[in-house]
Image (cartoon, rainbow, N blue to C red; front, side, top):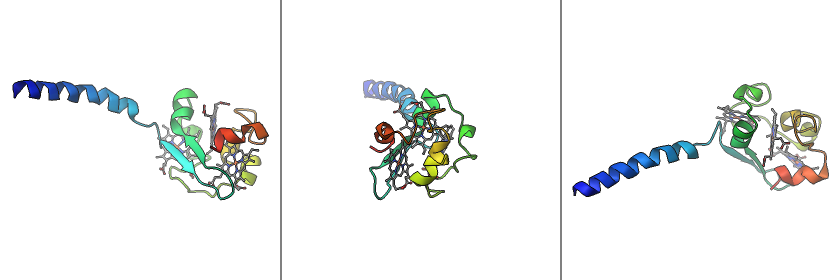
Length: 106
Ligand code: HEC
Ligand code: HEC
Ligand code: HEC
């Protein structure tokens, strides 16, 4: 009985750091489903942890903190709105290069 309690305590402690690691950064992974193209995955983790961006790098200048608060489309993005603020070949890969479509559309 006592042994089981100790085991439960140990596994309880071990799971805390695992939960912390699994915690998604910011708003997590968001999937957008445009009508005539494969889904687009936006990963907060990749932008925050790997690129070191701050929340204020996107919120609230380009995006609100709620999925779908703006109607994005490729025309606006290509003109430099939304993802196109950075994905224009300057800060990051260019949305207009046909080789890059599948980096967002998966
Ligand atoms: C590289 C740009 C970028 C950065 C940096 C960023 N976000 Fe976001 N965030 C987005 C986008 C894009 C959306 C979706 C907006 C939309 O669909 O209109 C979003 C949405 C959200 C949402 C709503 C998620 C939902 O399910 O509706 C939350 C919460 C959020 N962000 C929190 C944060 C926090 C906290 C940080 C900083 C730790 C952060 N974001 C940094 C781009 C960013
Ligand atoms: C930086 C990420 C990104 C790249 C790169 C990208 N797209 Fe998109 N695309 C989006 C987002 C975001 C949407 C809007 C999703 C939604 O419906 O909310 C979109 C929407 C679309 C749509 C739906 C109709 C429309 O006009 O919005 C088409 C078609 C499309 N993209 C084609 C392309 C093609 C072709 C390429 C390569 C030349 C490309 N995309 C590259 C992010 C990207
Ligand atoms: C504030 C600038 C900024 C905005 C806005 C932004 N990104 Fe990015 N994104 C970056 C940077 C920087 C990188 C990494 C550099 C590179 O790989 O060229 C990146 C990388 C990515 C990657 C590759 C991730 C990987 O390593 O697999 C995808 C996919 C992506 N972004 C999608 C999006 C989409 C979709 C949006 C709009 C909803 C968006 N980004 C908005 C700056 C931004």
